[in-house]
Image 1 (cartoon, one colour):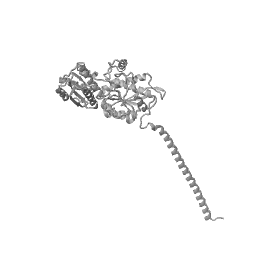
Image 2 (spheres, rainbow, N blue to C red):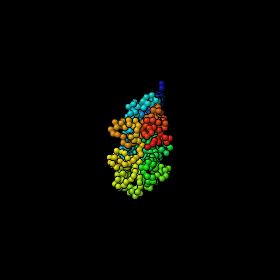
Image 3 (cartoon, rainbow, N blue to C red):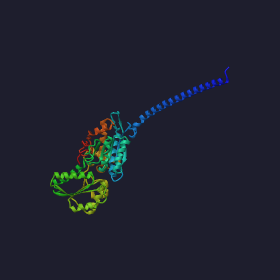
Image 4 (spheres, one colour):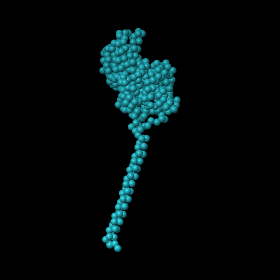
Length: 418
């Protein structure tokens, strides 16, 4: 018969065994739980990774480009000092888009269908820094396949650094300075002929008046040039023609003025003191209106006077009245060009906007959009490099511009006559 002490010992041993068994079971259960949690976490991470793979390609690049429309960025000033020309250029682009979409859109062979054009518009407020930033935004956030815009040399120069940075085609509809197109950029194009050609053509026109005995040989010229690359190019063009045709004219005065100036009295007094026969200025619309109003107040008179590419604008006629009648201008387009496509454009523009085209502004923008549409169709793709390559080969044979053919040169700029 077991003694109480031995019975108690066996009971303790059994208890210890039971406890060890329970501890082992608990330990095993805890191990299993840890393994289960580890597997679950790994599975969860794999699921999340799969989801992120689907989502992340669009991150940092803006909206994912769809295949139901062709997004075109448009960055122009419709407020600030360049608001009027910017408005007219936007209207030219929107008329072209309207007509393209009415015909069913642009055929993209790669997708086997036509797609409508969607304008993504930004007003740069005539501000250089803002203009460049908005081009960048259109490219990186809105997934546009190309950008149109850049009215004026200052805004065009600011925008022109973005296309190559993001490998996205850009067509300036209103900037012509050679500095924009002499930097070796590969994604920029322009529908305005160079400003130095404008200056050269201005002098050439005056020379033709000498040849036809309308002006005498040896007249003196006074030049007032805006302090921009546009002004520099204009002056260079005039100087080049004079050097090539000695004896026709001499430049007795040339001075620069700041863009957006409000007081030209000092400059104009210097012009008056030179007793020049012809006054040639290179100015944007608002500067032209301000300068010529003050010119009239001085009582000056010259045999010929020009403000470069400005003169016939509706705003100028409204502000200056009959004082604009004897001003001659070299412009990139005129509604008086004797082409059937020009007559149609003038009628279509009037019906679309409710007013006739003002000076050259809408026509160069209209043809820019048409050239881009042609390049997209020829590329058969929405790939930006393919579109860029086709822009280099585009040839619009029904262009509105002088000569009726639009093609971009090796540097991306057209070289049509004035």
